[in-house]
Image 1 (tube, rainbow, N blue to C red):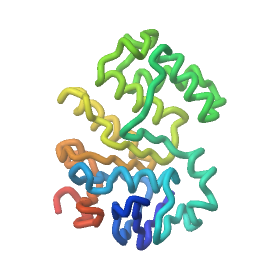
Image 2: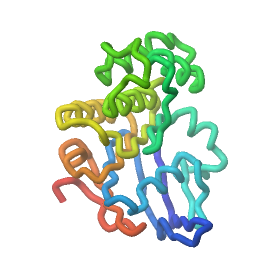
Image 3: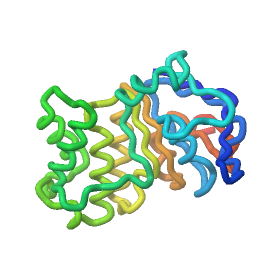
Image 4: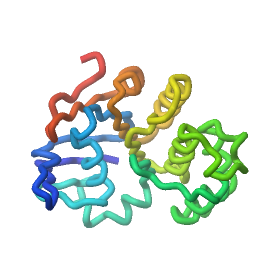
Amino acid sequence: MQIQIQDLSMTYPSGKQALQRLDLDLTSPSLVGLLGPNGAGKSTLMKLLVAALMPTEGSILVDGAPLNKVEGKLKASLGYLPQDFGLFEELTVTQFLDYMAALKGVLRSPQAAIRDVIRAVNLEEKARARIRTLSGGQRQRVGIAQALLGDPPFLIFDEPTVGLDPEERIHFRNLFSRTAQDRLVLLSTHIIEDVQSVCDRLVVIHHGQIRFTGTPEQ
C-alpha cells in the first residue's frame, strides 16, 4: 500500500489552520513514527487519512487513486485507534471485540481472531471482565486490540501508549515493530522513546508543518 500526501492543508471553520502544505509519501511495509507536541497537527492529519475530515487544500492518494474515490476500500483495510476512542462500559472485553469484529466484517473465524488480539495485548485474564472495571492502561489495550482485528494492511495509532506504564510501553513498541514487518503502520506520539528504537522512519510535525523526515539515526 502507498499513501501520497500532496500539498495538504487543513483550516477549521473557526479559522484555525491545523496543517500547512504537507508533502509526504508512506509506503508499506514500514513503521512510521509521527512526532510532535500536543497541538502540532498530528491528530488532524490522522483524521484526514481516515477520511473523517476533508482537507481544505491538497490531496491524499491511496495506491494512486484519490482518497474520496476509494474511501470504502481504505476503511475496509484500515485499523485505527483514535485518541478519543470510546468503549462500551457495560460490555465485557470479549463482547466489545465481538461487536467490533462484526462492524469490521471479520467473517473468517471471528472468535479465533478475537482470541489472537486479546493475547497480543496481554489481556487474557480480563477477557470476561466488564470494561467499566478496567484501568486506564487496560482500556487502552482494548483499543489497540480492536485496531488489530481482521489483520488490516494499514494501521494508524494516535497516542497508543498514553496511560500505559513503562513496561507496557516496551511490550507495545515490540508489538508495533512485529506488526509492521508486512504492512504500513503509522504511530503518532509525543513520547520520543516510543518511536526512536522501533521506527524505520520519523516525521516531525510542529505548528502544522513537517520540520523533519528521515531515519531515527538522522
